[in-house]
Image (cartoon, rainbow, N blue to C red):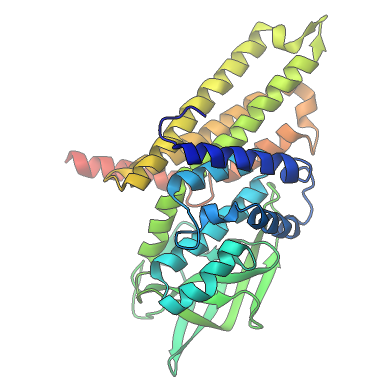
Length: 376
């Protein structure tokens, strides 16, 4: 990796993550049954390899936006399911580090860094996906203790997820993003029900039902929406990098197939159309990688326009991943249409990338609005 935005230790981390992927992920990625169960084992292996700390903030970890991006790119190259759990774990860790009390941080952060407890973030609801202001999950204080009621969906979680950070409305008299707070919830609480469901991309996701579940306030009341947006900004370059990892796998699979497949007495790679497709995939990939690492560097520098750059990188990289995986499937021809083939799986996963951690349409609206306001 010759990217000037990455330091030596980021490159070393990338190398370690690649070795981890070859050893633990390449073989299991094609198996799409029970993604939550498999990802729990992956998280334990990441912890054993010392890689889980790359997504946990100091003093219990060493995460910055670039290390998160490097890890997410390498994990997504092999398994988007593993990458998604890694990211969700990081969301929880960073929200806890930023808003938790000294006691909360001391209790949970070492366990998150060690992988003995897994973390998840529960924001979306059946009637409130991108519309955070439409959240209906409530948090009511009873004798100084909070109890949560409602339903969350698309919660990324593996088996053994213990810490769930829930965004809920703590002030019934508010609307929109006002009055939303974050709460720490025990993922094994008896009043909490997990309902895993299947997706086209075989991601470890579930619906979450809360029926009077006890919760501990995380941070200041009413500051939940802003805290979630802040952590998503930190992780957005990593979302772009994950798209790069998936696109890189698609390009590499296309090259391997083109070298091995023979048509009309020649390797498929010898045909002009194939070479153009490989060149197009490579150009898209290189552009997306530079945008992702540059955005991560800006976030680490605390640059004023870091959020805008991160959003632009995420939009471009995820759309590029869709184009690259489509080209990879076309290079494979009918072989790419076989259910369970690598490129067929990548094409399904690329669709999910444009919806996770905020849809591309929402990011485009925010990006355009910031440009318009700045130009007035």
